[in-house]
Amino acid sequence: MALKEKLLENKRLIEECQFEVRELQSTMSYQLGYQENIVPPVNYNELYYPFIKIYADIQLALDNGTSKNPSADRQYAEDIANSVEIVREGLENLASNAEVWMEAVIKSGIQGGLDTMGTPYSRYKAINIINEDLPGIVKVIAKDNDIRQIAWDIYDKENKFIERIYISKLNKLSETQDIFVSIPDVNDKNTSFKKSNPEIFEQKKMGGEEVVLTGGVTENYQKTKQDGSLDLIEKPLKGGLVQDFVQIDKEAINSNGVFKLEMEKISNGILEMQESSDPAVAFNNNIMAEVTDNYLKPGRALRDNEKKRFKEDYTKWFLEKEINSEMPIGAPRKKVAEPEAQEEVVAEEQVQGQEQLQEEQQAVS
Image (cartoon, rainbow, N blue to C red):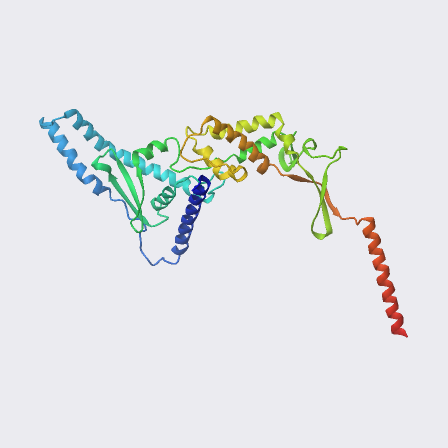
């Protein structure tokens, strides 16, 4: 399966899981008479019971001098004690991720929302189970009975394994980002750029100092005929009205030096958001690929040539999606019939008048 198809299939699975969440929420108001924990509480006592005994045995051996490796025993006892803080921190990080999770899910696939192309389906389902938005089971384990490798194992309601999350890795990741990838939101930067460049983008004042973009461009970037007049296209509106439109010269905009510099600045900002390339890949796959049809593999760093292509594609996407292809000129007006059409109408009315007169004369006689 090609990369594009894999990403689209991942998106489909996530959307299917989103439906499961909505379906469960829809039934809750009809089941108020049922007491049910869709995700049973995590049993930390079961995890720590054997380690409490190990800790006590180590301390006893250290106190009476029977430890065979005092240095290693002290370190392991310290690891057992510190693991409680690691788990507590992990629970806090899960809670902080949950706070921004729902907003990201609501905006899935768009700027500021969840990366539905690259977020692993297992991660998406696991977080929904942890948040108790889907039924399942969360178990806490120490891999290979090593207290330094504590993890949550997440299972679905059929007890099928979904994903393992190592708590220490979660804590480290949470220092710089969330445990899911969001699509960068550059809407404000794009709008700010347009407002700060009235030489290109048409705008008007709404009162006071408030400036509003009209969605059009200034005369220098409107297409003209060879004689220098605007190349207008007339389009019909409702009520017998018509409106003139002129095409926007996107090639001229792309040649503008200020425009080029700003495209470089905004796209560089996306590439430099994190040490990883995740934000740029998410923006590319969810937003820009709709225009470029160029998809990037999630979970890997971008090479220099790929970063160069990203910046070029951002400009291409901006010209396609952030700038209209045409803009209205003047106010809507009543369509004026062509001279030939007017003559045909008059001739038709004369014929109808003669026919009506003949019918009246026949009726009298």
